[in-house]
Length: 263
Image 1 (tube, rainbow, N blue to C red):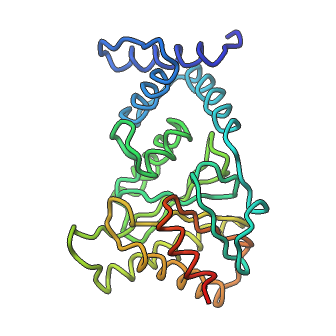
Image 2 (tube, one colour; image 1 turned 90 degrees about the vertical axis):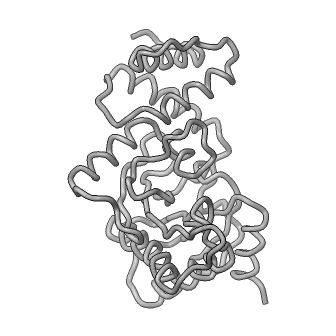
Image 3 (cartoon, helix red, strand yellow; image 1 turned 120 degrees about the vertical axis):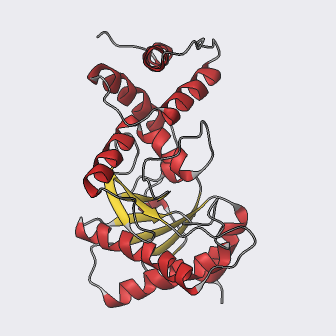
């Protein structure tokens, strides 16, 4: 295949996915609309075989999209306390050994087109291989992932080498977390740290697990996160040198900043 420019790449990917879906979908002319349609079609695509030609074009396109971001490594982050670091921004901009994905128990990513959850964002930036690898893991496991458990996959077209998928506790709207919910959330962090250490990773970036659609209160979740990571570092030998708490919203940043650096 001859080299394609970005617009040609998107047109090829869209045509493939539309033909595969057997739906009557018109490819828009605007590049922004094309990108949204491509992401939407990737979001809803089930975990099934795909051609090497598609993957080659997709990987070139998504890798260039990743490289166009303002990528940040652990060495670029100034706010730190020992091995613990705080960074506000989009987790897919972190060039680290592993980023943590707040997944659901099926571990296949978010199927809602253009949904703004971290699960959708990570799968969209990584590519369709991520869902395929997760599906392979889940088929071999033969059951849903336990709350508090974690699995590791390649990062594919992300800036990070790996993605560690963990399932946090879901809190019913209007309810408070139980003691078991708190223990399960702590287990998420421990499971991710154990996996990262077993792979001899040096840097990991945690999202704020369970604080989105799973409704865990942000401050209590942050307290559990920091306490669990500190307890792990004080009790285990680990390859990890940088443990990043990645936050997106201003209120989450203020909570972590106070807990980590406040007097």
